[in-house]
Length: 197
Image (cartoon, rainbow, N blue to C red):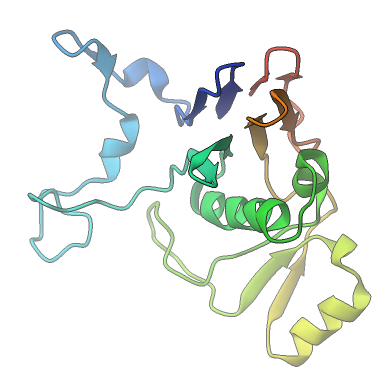
């Protein structure tokens, strides 16, 4: 699950209360909030494990609720669910918005791809170097060029790579926008409140 929100004051929020294990995330009463169940992937040993709990470390997690600023001001809250693919899908969405000037719906609906090149976050931490899962809407020419460059393509059905949502605030106009991915059968978007999940 992922939730984004924006209000008329320019406040933005992005939440990924991940997993089907939320009922097992106990509330820490003195703090008033639950610890994420993603702490299940922190390790106490061996000491050289990259996700071992230690002072000054930032253990890896796949959760990537995101906020973007433009000219130093709040601009948009966005995110997705999806394990190791979250960062990949969000980078593609962000580039479509920030670098290519797409609207929220255009950026959300653009074709996407993902890779399993690096070891997975969840056990058994498998990887598939050079394998790219890609929606065919990229076009036959691009798919053939990727193959020519040595990538093994897993051509996924269209509209299956990601579940991005976004809520945005445009300070100069006061416009609040929201959008959710048609890829997610359970996605809901309420633009009048700029609230998506």
